[in-house]
Image 1 (spheres, helix red, strand yellow):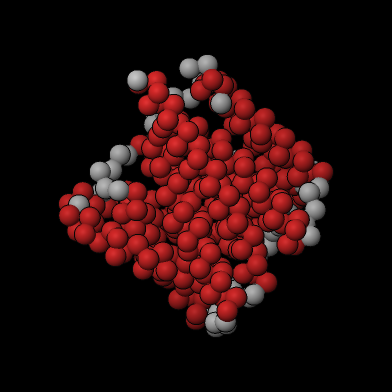
Image 2 (cartoon, one colour):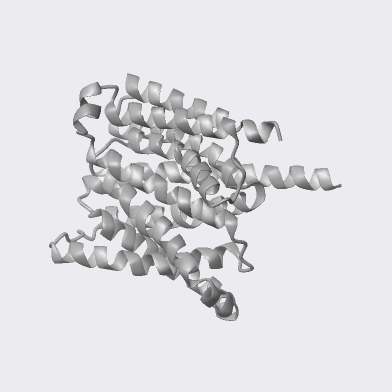
Length: 304
């Protein structure tokens, strides 16, 4: 009976992860499209999460009010969760897409599991073995292959693409978020958890949004803006965050992180169709190294 229950829970987790990665892949595509529509990145992130907040508040207000003591007891943790997910990961991803390819950005996301492993190791959340350390090193080599485009001069001169650097910061931030989410078990529902994290994230995003306004980076409000906002608020925000948090709670951050390798697959298909991007040789080498690193890091799970 217990084995059947475990198997059923695993299938549920994999179902969550499939749709989480599909929606996130769509987020990269829509984020790039937003750049072509001259929508500023911090403003896009701010309006995205404002809409998410407004959608969720009728369904979560009562529970959040009842669990206010638990929230108060974990204010610093919620602040960090809001900073690392809504604040940094979301806005830096949109910044990155202003400067780099959808394929590049999505391949960096494939390396998120190595940041999760590193953070889990540093915070002693999950045990780490030699396979995971080896996988971490190999995946880092894959990241370097993408950042340098296999050009030694780029590495020696540190002349990296600005968008690639934004994505490095973004995936590190998401690794911290996922590891902390695994470490702490909350009694509130997933939707209420997202709403609380969203609230703190919006507080963090507000100064950046106001700075863009001060720079006269104004959004042209038209039908495309509303289409973009609707998609990123519903699917990669509520949908993906709900599915990701649910999967992590069932199978753990390390195992869930393996499935992030589906994001570049979906993203490459979308980028090829909508932006005519090319999957180049350095993409191939980088993705092979990152995926090899993921397989190595998964040794702990398969041998456990």
